[in-house]
Image (cartoon, rainbow, N blue to C red; front, side, top):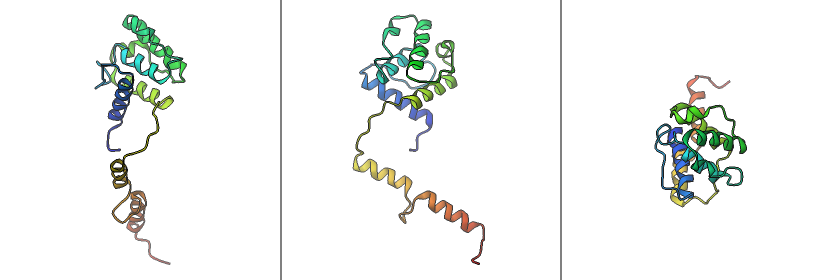
Amino acid sequence: MVLHSEDILLRWMNYHLKRAEHPRTASNFDKDIMDGEIYTIILNQLDPEECDLSGLEEKIKLRCKKVLKNAKAIGVDVFIKHKDISRGSTKLNQLFVAAIFNACPGLEEEELAEEELEEIKAVLIDKDGDPREERAFKMWINSLGIEDL
């Protein structure tokens, strides 16, 4: 809950790579994914029926084109070109990963461990047991100097 959006997306990518038992990991949105291999693995992991692994046997240009085709097949709004992937355009690749995540996160629901639940509560609830947003709103109202009528 305190991670930056870039870090969340990288963790999400690595989660799917690990589930696919793939040896590579992603630590950035340029050099690590510019060959299209990681995209191919992740898209296959999200929907193996629509996204096959045949792109892995292609050269980079054709693999990146196949990535875009597979992304469209699972409902991702594709706004980049294969060149953007292969050139390692950091911001465009980051946006593309976010679009894939939003269209098809592929996350399984699982029970939280007790310590994880306590960690979340510590972030969302203040020491008085009130939600932090409620406390912030009360403080804002009080700062306006409105007196009782």
